[in-house]
Amino acid sequence: MAVTRSRYRSASSAGTLVAFLLVLIFGSPWYVDWVNEGNRGLFLETLAWPQWNIDSDQSFRELLAADLKAILLILFTAVFISLLVGAQLSSARGTISAILTGWAAFIFAAALAALLTAFLLANASFGTAVVNAAGGAGYGLIVGWIVGIASMAGRRT
Image 1 (tube, one colour):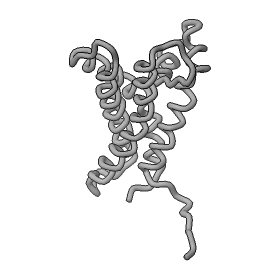
Image 2 (cartoon, helix red, strand yellow; image 1 turned 30 degrees about the vertical axis):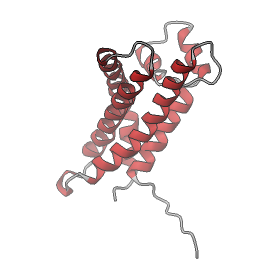
Image 3 (cartoon, rainbow, N blue to C red; image 1 turned 90 degrees about the horizontal axis):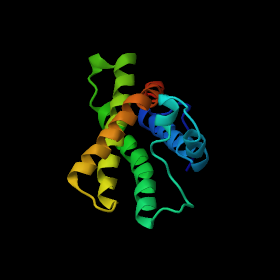
Image 4 (cartoon, one colour; image 1 turned 135 degrees about the vertical axis):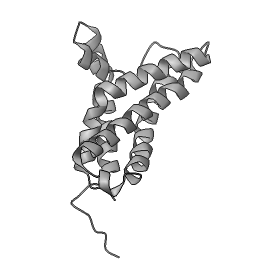
C-alpha cells in the first residue's frame, strides 16, 4: 500500500499549523520574559497571551491551566476551522471569506479555551471565566488574521 502526499494543505491543517507555531514560539517562556522586560507594543504583548511554561514558581494548578489553555487553543482552532470551512457556501468561497473564516475560528477557539481553563484556577467563578474568555477573544481578534491568511492559503475540501 503506497502512501501518497499531496502538495496542498487543507485549510484546517494550514490554520492549525500556524496556530501551533504561534503558541509554540510566542507563548514560550523566553518570549514572554522578553515582552515583560519592557514596553513592546500592543501586538507583541498580545502575542504572548497563551503562554505555556514547564519550569515556574507558580502553583501546579496555575501551570496546568496555562498549559491546557495553550493546548486547547490549538485543538479548538482545528475543530472550528474544519467546521466553518465546511459550512461555507459555494458562492461565498473567496479570499475574504476564507480569511474571515480562519480569523473567526481562532477568536472562538481562544475564547473557549480561556473560558474552560478559568475554572481550574483558584477561586474560580463564572465572572472570572467570562473575563478570561473576553481576554481570549481579544487575543483572537488581534492575532487571528494570521491564522485567517494561513487557512486561506489551504485548499477547502
